[in-house]
Length: 273
Image (cartoon, rainbow, N blue to C red):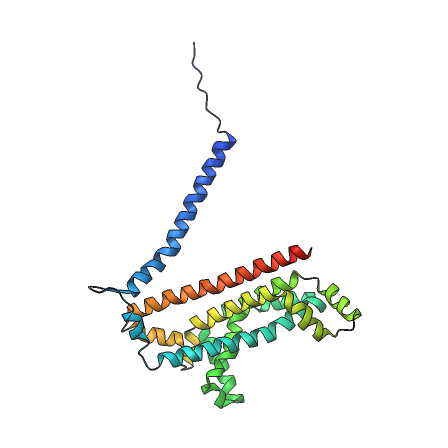
């Protein structure tokens, strides 16, 4: 009598357990991949052989007399770039989505160009323009602001555009117009408050980009914080590792603010509904 082999069919519960195990494994690997360099930077930056935990490398990094000036200039650049970016992009994106959807698609495509244009080529072109139009502006720190706005556009445009497309602009402007409000009043009092999370996300991306941009500042001979980091890293790598760790912490804090603001808006909208 032949013996038949019966292959057991996995039950749905077993299949679900296998999927859960795989997801957990991938999640753990991702955590290790992300946090291991971060923890290693913290250990390397806040310790010294024979001393253990110490803030010495970080303090030594800021003993450079140009450190605070570089940090101050970079923060001013971040604020100025963010303001200019919002003033230019928010009204433009709202107008295009409201009146010219086809042009909005073309603008979205064009906004990607800064990604494919090398920084060296962009700086060379802008330098020639500055020399012809405003030679004195080239040596000013503020000459970096237009360049930073350009390279921030691909990310910031999409962050704001996503928020604008989630709104019913025609209804908002029609309702405001029927109540006697101008288009500018509608933009400021109705549209912009509904774009708070999108604008905050775009601002964070812009600030992060300015805090990390090195090539353009170096080519234009401006001493920003990234240039300072590269200069000091040659003599004090532990201090720069500690500073990088703190920068990541600040970035996470900003992300937490955006997440909290987004959740607060969703809760408020649900209560309003």
